[in-house]
Image 1 (cartoon, rainbow, N blue to C red):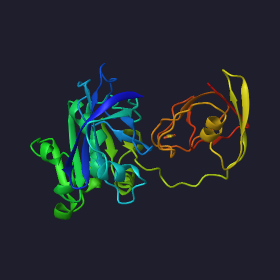
Image 2 (image 1 turned 180 degrees about the horizontal axis):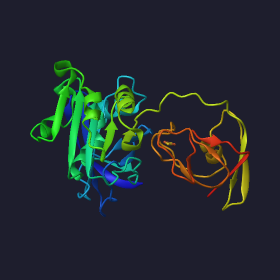
Image 3 (image 1 turned 60 degrees about the vertical axis):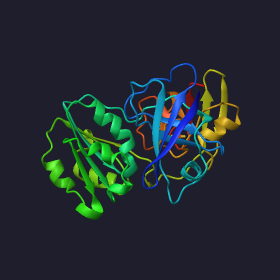
Image 4 (image 1 turned 120 degrees about the vertical axis):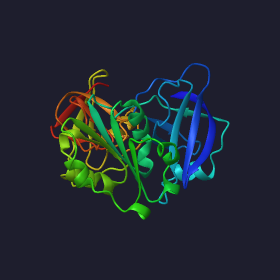
Length: 296
Ligand code: FES
C-alpha cells in the first residue's frame, strides 16, 4: 500500500466525482495507461478504480467514480461521505488492460468506462475514440474531449446508438480495438469485432455457468504445506484462513489482486481477466486436477 493524501474530490458530471490522491514524501509508483489501483476506504471497503490522470505525474493519482444506484457501499460512501484532506492508502498500480503495440487504435468507451480509456487514448499516436453516454451531462471528461477531432461523442438520448457493425466494417485490419463500458456495450462489441483484435475491460463479471465445485488440494511450495479446498469455499478464503496473506479486491475475478503463480497442476480459470500461463486468480478459480501447487 502507498500512503497518500486525498487532495481533491470534485463533481465533474452527473453522479461522477473525480478524486485526486497526492503523494506524501516519496513519489507515487509509476503506472501505464489501463492500470488501476485498489483504494482502501475509511468504511473498511476496498474498491478498484482505473487511473485516469497523467502517467508522467508521479505526485498524483486521479480516479473517477460513478455513484452506482445499486452500490455495494463503495461509491455510495465516496459520494456521500468522503471529503478531501484526509490520509488514504492506495495499492500499487496493477494493469490487466495494457496497451499492446499497434499502428492504430479504435477506443470505445461507455460512460464511466472512459476512465481507463482516457490515458490510453492520450498515449496512442494514431487513435480514434468513440465515447458513448446517455447525455453529455452524465459523461465525465466529455467537455475536454469535444475539441479533439479524433473523438466522436455520442449522447444516445440525442444521437441514438452508434452502428458498431459499420465501424467494424471500415476498420483497418491492423487496428486494435479497446473497449470499456457497460456489459451491453461490451457484448455488442464482441459481436462485431474480431476477438483477436478486441481488448475489453469489465467492471462486473460475466454471467457464466461452471461445473459444480469439487474439492481439491493446494500445495504451498515455499512452506511445504498442503491444504484441502472444499466445494463452496474459495481458494482465496482457504489460503487466507490458513494464514497466507493473499491480497484481494473485487473477489469476482475482475481486478487481479489475488493473482497466484501456479507451479504445477491444472487450474480451472473462472476469471474475466484472462489469466496468463502459470497464473490464476484465487478468488474465483479452482482446479481441474486433484492438486495445484502454488508459489506460496
Ligand atoms: S480479488 Fe479481484 S480478481 Fe480476485
